[in-house]
Image (cartoon, rainbow over all chains, first blue to last red; front, side, top):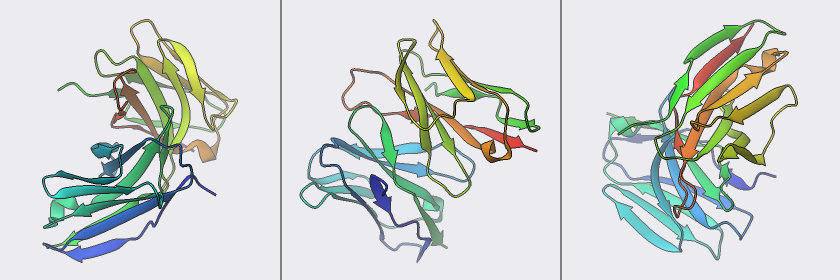
Length: 109
Length: 114
């Protein structure tokens, strides 16, 4: 069983909709929770990170962590076609990232 | 801002050949990570270096080796290439001691083994 589980989707939404992505993890020792965005044939790009339970907002993006449930989420408000990409959750404890499988999101114009 | 540089961007090799991938980290980053990403898969950690010493090892085959040089750039050497080695190879860099230690990825090298 992987340390981080993520539904690979794919997820297709109309422009302007809220995109909801989530991951679960098994190791309660994990300290930092990150979301990466990866466009096709490109390297993963760090979107957001958080290390405590609760919400963190950055523009249209909100990262949510629930350590008691070992559950993390990313919400994208007012989604745009340019948000179409694969979103990977990543969790780290000792400098080594453990990635989820990635969820492929398509925002339809 | 300067990013992680990887070369070459594309590489075609035949079975049993060798390949060398290079990674130049972001300036003042002292830690380098190598990942392998197969089609439709998440990046799998191979190996990492901190201050020119191997710091962690993941699912790196014995046919592969890597090192970090005095200027902090890193090279991944792959020998006796197999068809299954065809993948995207990413390098990431970070600055150890910065909390949290976030990794910044390069554009990747796409390796095709024929």
